[in-house]
Image 1: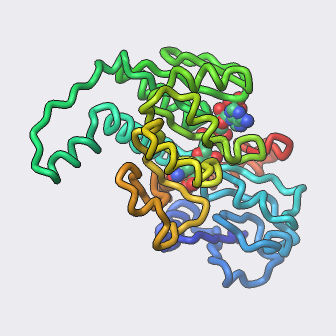
Image 2: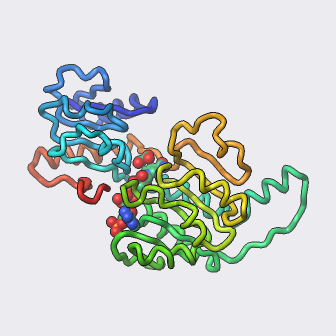
Image 3: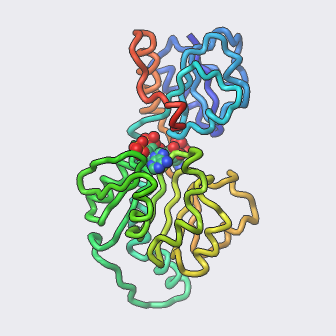
Length: 309
Ligand code: NDP
Ligand code: OXD
């Protein structure tokens, strides 16, 4: 049995080593050196080349290297009868929670302002409210958003979340649907985006949604660049409607040289590393999926075509 592997990072050797250790009989074939296409039974991919996944007549499952799957669904020739499994992995979940918590604390404790003061040699007292008076809101209450919201709540922040369907999470005020969005935004001072990219969520971070947040709110976008209408962000920051933004994802990645976000003093940038799938834990999850298929059991975390995530 052979597994097709394609990523855009230089971590292939970590995956190869993890699979060699856990499943020595699984042939690991790194795209484009795939050998005989008929021998490929499984694919583990990030941004597969368009039209590539239809080339394998015996393909049984497509595993996404990431939690997001739009990089697979965007292939117009994707063989739709093959299940697509999204990445659910403890390492990925906790990595994202760390990233979100880091920025919530950074905005809550005025770190950008304190850094600017240090640069200017200024000693100036900057006040901050207790955590339970700081209102944090998480868009998307799935695997990642749910864990982030629970963790933020455990630090006693006034935490809310927004999802498509109603949810109950202890310590988190839950809003849902179109109707709940305005109320969720109106109460949110630090907005965290952990939505999947779908037709319904594309461009959701825009001038209109920024205007519904309280003045001086902060944005953390760790989901996808296409959630954000980029040209709406700088006016919102320059007018003071938003006080700061931490961005991990962009419409074009790498973020092009000369893009106005690079130089903006209120924008913090990371190169799509909010969380990274860890081969040491995630390879086992992929192998569990393969074992379930072989045993005739239903796969877990299969993406629903009709929902788009
Ligand atoms: P899940 O599928 O587990 O959760 C998605 C959540 O979004 C659910 O709560 C869902 O609601 C909600 N949602 C979906 N559509 C809507 C909508 N139209 N309106 C309101 N809520 C909606 O995804 P994950 O938590 O695993 O991952 C989230 C995203 O994070 C990924 O898709 C990916 O884009 C991004 N990501 C980014 C990384 C990075 O390094 N920057 C790393 C990993 C992931 P409901 O619960 O009702 O279904
Ligand atoms: C993911 C990502 O979707 O890393 O997992 O962006």
